[in-house]
Length: 119
Image (cartoon, rainbow, N blue to C red; front, side, top):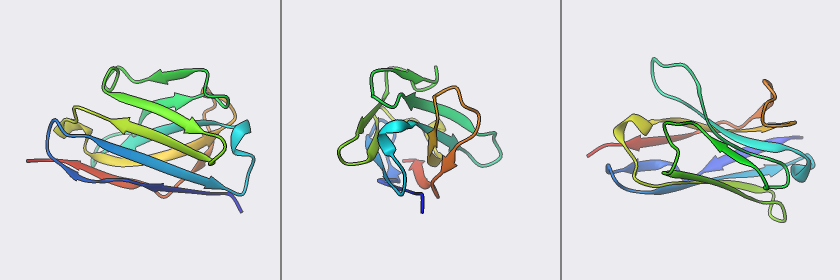
């Protein structure tokens, strides 16, 4: 069955970096756009970034632009989110989502990985 498994979260100090990974299985990964969505306690979900099925197109939320980089390896069925210059406001559960295209409103979700930015 379709499965998305995120990893790489943890506790990091402000200004630090983390790299999230999302390993996909059970579907044709290279046919799906992949996005990262985060949700902080008491806040609405926020779309962080999305990458097209081929990897040729990416987009980012203004809040993470120039700090986060999304990438994918279709040979490994994995999508990544490199997060640099982390801020306390980046603290959230990060989910990867498989979507038909980046503008799709629905998709398949992973279980999430916690990112905590704190000194």
